[in-house]
Image (cartoon, rainbow, N blue to C red; front, side, top):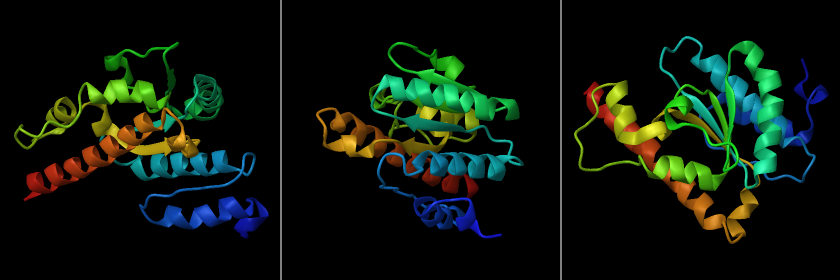
Length: 187
């Protein structure tokens, strides 16, 4: 099967990254099919995690509430028939912290995700977590994030870009600390 028959050049170039667990930046004009790349990444993660009992979530960050609402509605129609829960969490539609722990795909703004993850960020003076419950209480909702999708990443250059940068940095730090805690538990 020729992949290029179904996907454009931007999408074909991104598909190669799905064979490995690597970070991916897709920089392409509006209307070039980046959403399809997001959806392929979501499907790949779900497919890879089907046999893994550990809970996880996917976070989609967009700079404006309207884009979060649009993607949440679109993805509810696409993914909820397969048992994937989708929630919009913005200033207008505030999710309860405990409810969000059971949501698979969260569509939110960098400011809202900053608030949710800053209140329960990594705490360095705690013992190494011994189980998933301890991991969650030490690292918060960010400990469950297996895929972070950042739309409109060029907004890093805007006045609100500092928040997006802080969120991305916090997520990377949290994942690094989680890998470290996991390797210490295994040892």
